[in-house]
Image 1: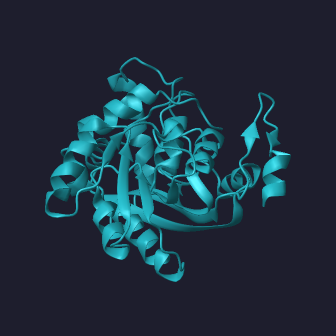
Image 2: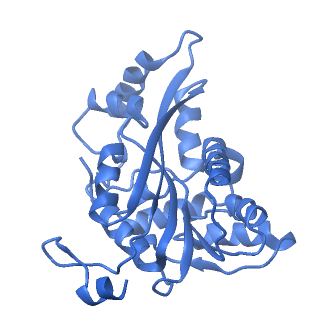
Image 3: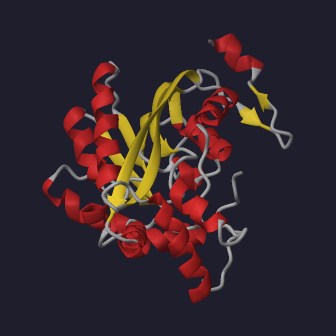
Length: 286
């Protein structure tokens, strides 16, 4: 079940994590590296690229090195993340860094050859953001993305269910639902696959601090706004004990979804009932 997101909470969490993100986001960097390596087999020469959810800018230099003639833009919802990205890019070719929401990209229609979107879709309304990506991409432009699937943080979710019925863990989108959403939004030739990773921690404090330092906080609008009491947290701590590995370390699972698809050739619009329409005049022009 997907929950409505509190975008203010998302922005604040990543702003607070900007100083610590690079030292902690080991998995996120590995996923970005994997995405860049997959671009080696996709034979395109984009001139305008945007990294949506660029964070501290780790992937920006990798993309610039892969496509030295391209303009590589960075977009992120958290201004503090962009300040870190600006410091990272001082030594490299200067390109704009833009503060903005992926669901409302401050970018012109049909101006982008490739969108690179690393572990960002889980912070968005999927259909809204894909419609926006379709708007800004040139016809047959490339969307390259990764995100986290429903098995992500499953140990934490299971442990909290032993305590109460509240929303304590972010909800994640199933791989098949992502494929369906790409099709609904007229993206062509979608390719989606999944991988898994498990991180381990000496104790619960290390695990929760790790999530905090990368800005991965519960941003559901329906979450409880009050503090978790000591009694409830102790029950959660005991429930987490069942998720230790053979070395006695707490496990934290991640389901990693990778995918790419091509922007539609024709401009489409969605009405209030979710019906997508393509102008007949544009089909004739094609």
